[in-house]
Length: 171
Image: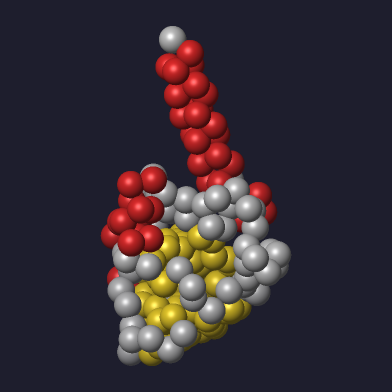
């Protein structure tokens, strides 16, 4: 009986930790262990704004994601961790335009370009949609990146143009 009670308490603590981690980086859940990173830095990427094709694109923030243990075990075995990068996109053209998370790619520490991860589409507010003239959308793009990353560069390709947003690890 006591073993079941202890197991239930442990499970509830785990659920509570995931809930707190989902609330944001300010709670120190960057590495999924309830602690801030070794450097103690908590500054998120600075807001960046660029015009790319028919869009005005704003990098709002990025967050390391907390995911179920079995998925995190798989990623850790691969030396990777999930990150969600949040953007706001405004259509500045005179016609309807479409934006998709597949318009984005990323590189980490100068690596080859990687596509967004579809593992996380149920855990992020996806950046997908049709935008009328002047309309905006806010959403995230998820990537599986090396756990020991230092610098990330996210690139948007749209309307024959490219724009890149670069930031350093903040935790």
